[in-house]
Image (cartoon, rainbow, N blue to C red; front, side, top):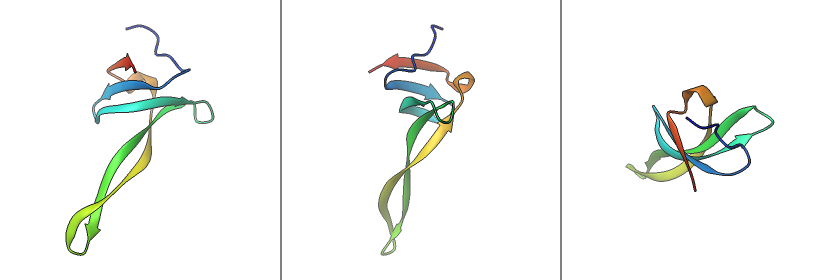
Length: 65
């Protein structure tokens, strides 16, 4: 696999699925938004994102956006 670019957003595939990611220089890892859902008024309908971090070695494949 080619060297993963750290100067732009990319689409990554990992064991957690497919996500848009970008390199975080401060954390020395790639960061991506992970979709979450919580209960609201008795239904699972409150969606939000949490940052997740992944080390380069755990990225199975990647594609430029």
